Length: 350
Image (tube, rainbow, N blue to C red; front, side, top):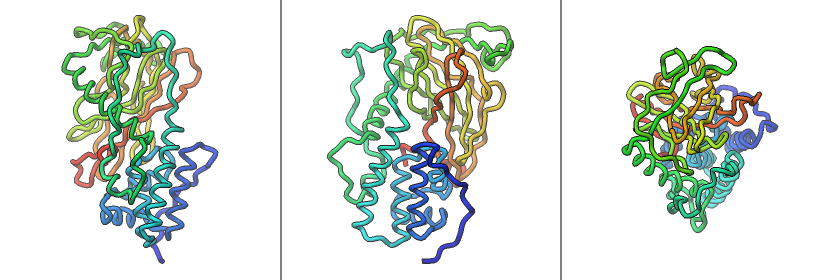
């Protein structure tokens, strides 16, 4: 089988971790199937009922950001369609890659230990709903096992419940309390979008403090990443899409009884390449969150124009002020801007 050679891909070092090893596996599969171009895979994915762009597939095999389960299975099915594999091999391969993806997802999402003074009362823990199947996957699985809850499905089931709770919280009016102290090591202070002396931002009526933080979010057409914790403070990077731009932010919630100070650094990923956010939010801003307060970083401090056929993610680091390194980074869910430059499809909608 003859294929046109695409642009040369950059090397991946397997020592970089499980995401790098996973991407190497995706590249190897494409080579074994005859090395189709990503454009050819995009065309084939539409024919087999799971359309994705060539940018989405090339990003999945780049090893910079974890692809969604739906993208991985669509990539595998498109490769096998190019190689004209029989349905039995397709079924086996899809099952194998579903397990690989779950292992990757678990490796990239270690459950953070509960803070000793922030452990929720078991009687008040929200109950996760049933596993939510990923749209467009069950009918493409070719006989994938359906009698076990995968790690990914359990996570998505909880996210669905939390998204509903988040909408209720927004309607109820969550309190925002934050002190922008300035970049770590800098005497300059910020309060919202305007520079000035450190002061508490005006607060609406604050919601009662609770051991379990509300669901992260930025409002309409937004998605956030997994919850992370620093000194009892919950945080998550978020992406919001409007008519012309994408806004990247960090969501934070202090359910404790004492103020918590953290330092925040923000970036975003565009078509698989990471870029620092402009200004101090891209190098490091120190923030104090009041007890019981929930907030997001100021609007438009990190925003970019929508580009057609391009994938985007927010990327953030939150750590304690005294730490010498930024520690673990977290990323929001991927959003794919379609070729019409209008439609936005999130990874959980694919």
